[in-house]
Structures are given as C-alpha cells and as structure tokens.
Length: 327
Image (cartoon, rainbow, N blue to C red; front, top):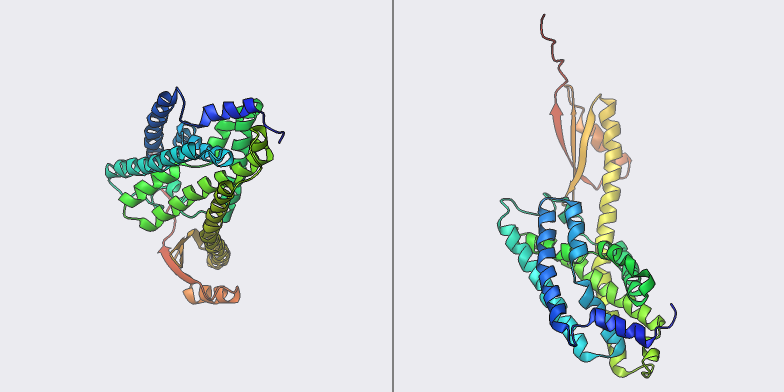
C-alpha cells in the first residue's frame, strides 16, 4: 500500500475517533445504531433468517471503535485508545444484554438445535480466523484509501461482530453456557484479527512516517506484543474446535456411506445421519423385516469405524397406495 499522507490520517481520525467538536453527534450515532442492530440481529437469529442477520451486520457500528483502536495504537494516541476500548467493551456488553432480553420473550430455547444461525456461530475454527484476518485487512485498506471505501459494506457483512454477541445473550438466557462461550470466542477472534491485520496494513502505509513520528517506541512495541499474545491465545481453542469438527465430519461421512449401503441392500433407505455429543444417530425406514443391526456393526468395523458409537432409529413400514374414488 502506498504511503499515507497527513490528509489521509486526518480523514481517518475524523471517521474513527470520538473526539473533537462533533464528538457528541458521533457518540449519539453510535449508541443509536448499536441497540437497533442488536435487536435486528437477535430477531434474525430467533427467526433463523440469514437476510435479517445480514441487515444487522450492515447497520452495526462496532467496526468503528475497533478500527479506532488500530489507528490509536499505531499513532500512540492513549486517550483515543482508551475511549475506543471503552466504547467497544460497553457496546459489546449492551448487545449481549439486549440478546438476553429478546430471549426472555421467546417461548423455547434459542440454541444450536433450534436455530441454524446459532449453530453457525458456536463452533469457530481456524478457518474463521483466516477469513477474519483477510477481512480486517480489506477493511483497513478501504479506510485508508478513499477510492475503494465503497467496499466497507461488504466488509461489514464478511466480519461478524454483533450477531455472535446477540447469540451469546440468547444462549445464556437459554441456559446453554457452552454455546455462549463458543459464540463469544468467534466475536473475540474477529476483533483480534481486525486489530492484528489492521496494524500490519497501517504499518505498511507508513503512518508514523507521515506524521513525522519516530519509527518505534516502547509503548508501541508493548501494544503490538499484546495484540500478538491475544492472537496466539485464540489460536489454541480455534485449533481444538477445528480438530473436533473435522473428526466429527469425517466420522459422519463414513457412517453415512456405510449406512446407505447397508440399508439399500435390504430395500431400506436412510432418512438422516446426525451427531449428538459423541454419538452418530442414523434414522432409517423400510418394509419389514428390519435389516439386522449386527450386519451394520460388522460393516462399520470393516470400514475402520468400529470405535464410533452408532445409534439406529428404525421405522418399519411401507408405502400404501391411496385408492381412487369410485365413480
């Protein structure tokens, strides 16, 4: 990225920092849009509506204080760093609280089993970190270069900030603490990735050189080191989730292939194959008699899936022709 000018930096400061003569209007805008986006996100999760959740991503203003943190770290601007950090923390807490409140009005638990939007956010993996790093870099470049700033709405959609926090509130209200923790991990991953990739982009833009600041300082180094430690901290649980999800998918695919062959040999069909904890659940149906489960177990053993705990739900029956009305 080409070196930034002082005019570029002033434009970025005016977009990201909540100070100056118009700080009141910026704060008002932030606290007006954030609760509304939280309610939209929670409603989208409850109704399992991807379009509604995407709308919340576009409206949400949480990206502003996060990128403000990036710029303040690079500029060694402690007052704005603290101000942006406070807005980020209080804003995140407000979204979680509003998600909890929305959950109070839902007559059933909003968890992964009842909402695909929840299920998509409670098991983040390393690939989510990779995507967040790339998205954060795009967001920082779009901010620094006014000629490509029209990509920012796409960045808002690609980086999920408010929906995971809404899921945290909804799942906490539903008593699913483990799922709430997973969704918060996704939010934390996205925030840390934006900080890390954003700082790299700003460094490539030679921000400190444009302002005539010395190339490095102990305070700036500490900031970079802290963000590096945060990035390292999220990699561990993300890696563990990735391993667990990959093993689960491999196990599920293997069992489904064996079960389909076992069912078809007896004139049956497999309705669904799913996982529950460490078990694989197979629903199958067909005419009596039911195919022997011992043969399925043998087929699984032969396929190297002898360690998998498989549970079958067999529905015995046959299609019955509906008679034509007599004329």
